[in-house]
Length: 560
Ligand code: GLC
Image (cartoon, rainbow, N blue to C red; front, side):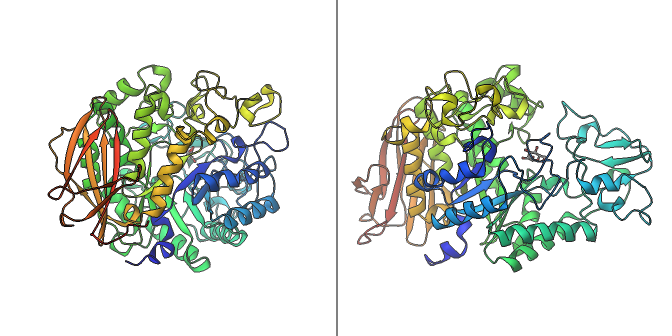
C-alpha cells in the first residue's frame, strides 16, 4: 500500500457527515433550512475536518416521510433552492476539499409521483406502459404484517388500489409504492437521474432501503421477481463509467453474509461501502454492560472485504437507533440502560434518542464513545449535531425526535432561522439540551468542548491511514472486560487504541508487539513520546478514559 492509494480509494479513510438541508441553516428566514444556508456553513464543516458530506433527500416531495417520498428524481424541492444553488454548493464544497454524496431513494417513490399516478390508471400493461413500473398482484395477499418496516403505521406490505382492484407492493408506508427494479424502463429512468446528478457534480450516493430491492416471491411459492444484485451491479457499473471515483454507500441492514453479497463478494463490484449496523448495535450493548466483548465479537465476525470496500461506522443516524440485530434479551438491556421510558422507544426495536442524553450527559462517556467510533476500523459517519452533543425532542413524532434544527448559537431559534418559532419546519430542542446550553458558538473556541474533541479525533484520523486501512487485532490484557484494546497495523506502523467502558479507573498493559524494544510510541492525543518497556506499554485510564498510541520502528519520525 502506498500513501497515494488513500486518494485513489478515498472513501476508505474519509470522514462522512450527514445532514438534512431543511434543518441546517435557514438563509431566507422562512423557517426552512435551505441550500444557501448550508453553503454559508461549508467553512464550518471544512474546519470540523469532514471530507464527505451526505445530503439527505432534497428532491420535490409531499414530505410525508421527510423527503424519502420523491415525486421527481431530477428536481430540487423549491423550498430549499434549485439546481443552480446545488451547483454553487458543490463547487464550494469541492474547493474546500469536501466531496458530496446524495441520498438515492430508488426502492420506492411517493404515491404522488407521476409514474405511480399513471400506473394505477389501467391494469393492462399492453395499454399502460407505466403499469409495470410498480409491482401489482391481482390475488388477495395473505398476512404480511411481520414484513412491514413501520409496524406502528402499517399492517401489510400490500395495499389494495380501488381504481383497478389490484394490490401494489410497499415495504415502507403505503404512500411509498415499491418500484419494479427489474423493469428496463424503470432502470433506464433511474440511471438517467443518477447520470444527471453525477454531471451536476455529486461524488456518489448513499443508497436507501437496500434490503427491500429484492422483491422475493419465495414465501408465496413464486419465482424471485427481482434479483437485487443484478440491479446493483448495473447501477455500480453505470456510476463507475460516468464518474470513476464516485461511491455507493449502502443502507443494508442485513446479516453479514448478505452484506458481503451486496459488496459483490470477492469481486467487490457492488457497494463500495455499507453501514455497519451490527457493529453499531454491539457498541451500545458493550456500553450498556461496560463489557467490550459484544463489540469484539461483532468486529471479529465481520467478513473479509475486497480491498476497495469499506465499512461505514456510526453511532447515530437520522432514523431510530435500531437494535433489531440484538436478541430480545440484549435489546431489553439496552432499552433499560439508555431508553427505559416507552416514549423513548419506537417500533419495538429502537430508540428515538441522541447519544448524550442516553449516556446521562456524562461528558467523559460521550467523549469515550466518539473516540471509540473514530478508532474502529472503517469510515466514521457523523449525523449533524453530534459534534456539539445535541439532544432529542421526545415530543416529536417517532424518528423526527432526532431531526431537530442545528443549534448554532444561544440566540433565537438557536441561530437556525430568524422566522417566528411557530413557522419553523421543526421545533428546536427545548430542554437542558436546548441552544442556550448546547450550541456551536460556545464550543468553537473552547479547547475543552466536545466540538474541539471531535475536531481533534478527525484530525488524528486524517493523518493516520492505519485507521482506514490497517489490519485489526484485538489485544490481550488483564485489566478486565471493560477495557477494549485494539491495534490497527499497516506495514511498519500501528495504532493502538485503549478504551475503558467503565466508570472505574484502571491500569492496562498491552504488548505493542513486533516493533522491538526501541520502537517509538507517541500518544496521539497528548503528543507525549513514550518508552516501550519490554515491548509493552502501561497506561492508567480514568473512568471512561481513552488512549491512542502510534507505534513505529525506532528512527521513524512518526510525522505525521
Ligand atoms: C430508509 C431511511 C428512512 C426512510 C426509509 C424509507 O430507511 O433511512 O429515513 O424513512 O428508508 O425511504
